[in-house]
Length: 217
Image (cartoon, rainbow, N blue to C red; front, side, top):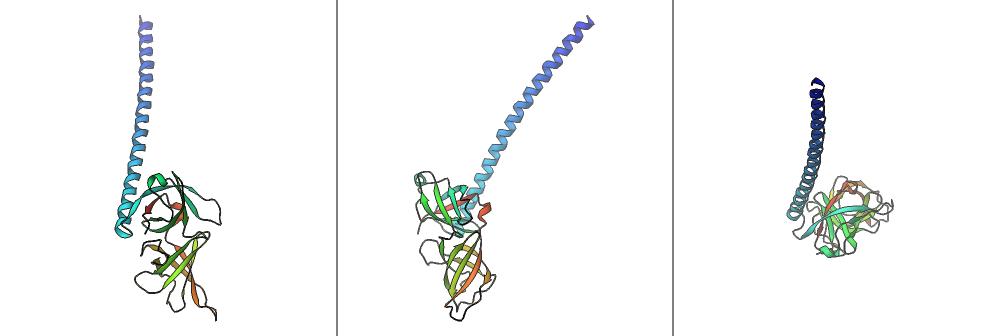
């Protein structure tokens, strides 16, 4: 009799442990699903916040948010692939930006993806001026892997630490979007007409995940 009772208790214990393990596995699965949903909601809230900041501070005509899905591995180029294309209304020459500053512009587009040439790509050119109405308009060209070189008239009193923003020159980007900060003023030669400066871009492309695509001007 005692042996039978012990056997029943042992079977009951094994069954309960099995049921507990199954319940624990179910709860862990539910927790994983809830965590993933929370991460998605948090990311979506961040995207909506980014869109609100950009439409308030840079340009009111934003097309929407896109995710960076690939980065060109070439050290001589600086190009991003986005997960939005013609089916989403994306067109060539649309500006691409983040709250911290300008990223570049769309140069190629398919139905589902778009290629962005960033500001530091050698094929990139953007009109710039001193932030705060300091005067002078110049052109900045990409210098891989992570800088720009801007040229101004030698009469422009530009110095290290000055912030450059987009100007109306070129007609691609909205005016007043942050481009970067002057890191170095190159020496003037006796025959130089323009003053050249090296610019550190406002946006670190290595950490950009979501960007805002703007309607073209």
